[in-house]
Image (tube, rainbow, N blue to C red; front, top):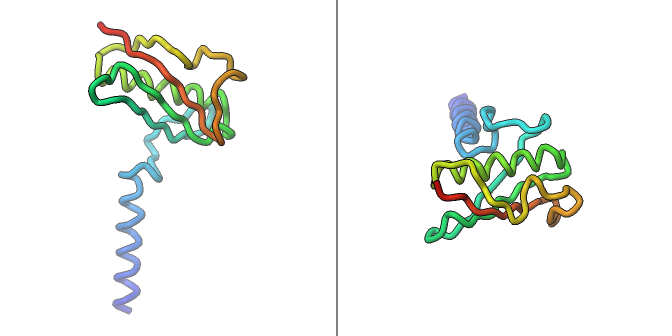
Length: 114
């Protein structure tokens, strides 16, 4: 009986921690009815230039584009206090021309100085 209680408590603690690492984040924004995993990459010495990858594009291209734009704007606001971005490849790019590798798209841009 004690083993069962310990297993249940361990499982509850594990699942409870999943939200903190983003596995079950109920507060994550939804785009076109879906949640997307996004990641920003930038050089520490030059946060102005960045790339954003959005996974599981097959769920919804429209949603993935919106998620990528959202993450990009968050990045620029965090580091430069502006949502203005000069895109190399971004949400205004023709969806057919977006670089999709596997099931992931990549945006590239530069945050404008304030």
